[in-house]
Length: 637
Image (tube, rainbow, N blue to C red):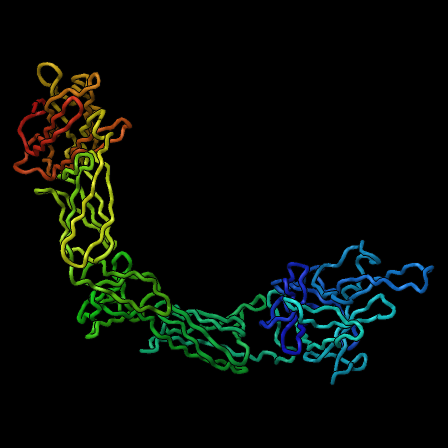
């Protein structure tokens, strides 16, 4: 049953059937489960004027909610005494002023003059109305008729009350207020219909049997008529949700739906609106009429998802004849429907367009600076994108200075400049030492980061002009842990061939002569040791130099590599040597790294990598040698 007010609204369990205590109130929305009530009574059909009935709420699957009934709140009426000697009489009644109709479980016993489980609390009488007057008792009441509802009370003077719609509450409610002299009972329009679990409100009782036809959606590209594969087609409400997907060859989708647990392919007759969605295409709709029988084809032309835009210079002028590319976010090509990459040139107004673009994240770029690139997420409706190319560029000069030594310039510092999401690197050098970046664009915010051995890295914000030169200074503080090392380490890393490269080091022994640290004399002096001789592996091998009595042994140390196995030269060995200083926390700092691939000259058995000098406090001076030498495993350099 659905109960409508004079203005067409359905009565709804305002707080929802699941709450078990919702008021009834009118709603302007489309009726659903909350506006639908099942009838436990009457026992005869059709319903007759004067029949008693019980209304029960349903859940979201259209199944009855046990014990959740439409009931009238109870009240207590205190009857006046005829004389002082008469006892005070209290009677239970339904309805009365401000006694609302509720959707709730039955009341329990314990209220004054009330015993729980009284069926009168949720039993109503339906009365048919015609021309504003009640129809004779027993007259059939049909769907669409006007009716009133009443309920019994235990007040003998007023044995019957009628529902009345009150609109003075928020939310509006239906209340059982029918006091003498008050407004007349509310007249509602009643709708009877079959309800099925999971399916819901069934078609009207007078719907013809099998008035339906098979529906095939034919989906194609509007511009060319080419069938579209993989499109999903659905029937929009109020149709039963028939749906289907187009085949790979002909763009046809046979619409089906699951109804009453079975797959149906016969769509009810009448107007139907179909919606098609597909990757690379805009959402499309088509309306048609389904006949009483047979079959019908509904054609749905679809328009491509378009990505359009313009290429402008920084002054806002169009740039004609510029190549524009559409790729994925990693710059990998995306192919169009003809299996060609998306790329095109702008017209005289700087405009470009791409048709049938897939619905995903894409990048739009030109042949200019990557800062021009735009990454956008494309949906069915497409997008319009402007690419602004800055024709001018600036020069950025970076100076890195020692903040702990009167801002003395630092040579060999690493500098990283980030502008517009793109990064460039350089090393300070020259006189005075500087790092220079040419053709920097776009103008605007940038970040400069600098680092060098023995100092703490630092980043500073900067502003890049549209043209001209800007100088940026980065001040570095000394890293005390690096400038006070507790050890120095030489590390050899290598590839698979030659199979046996050996790390060697010589230096002052602390007395007369020089030590030679190698594979068969791994600890020639107490302050130098070779950790392991990796004869059949790819390393690393490490030689560590440590202080003696809190001070390093000063002097010049030499480092070289012996190609012991001699299968091939150093050229393709992938070998490298790093010089590391180690702080008190055991953390290394790289003071230099040299690659065998950078060796000049004719190959020899020995690779003389570097010389370095230590003072007692760990002060370091490095002199890369990077030269081949002749000799054998016992040669001392």
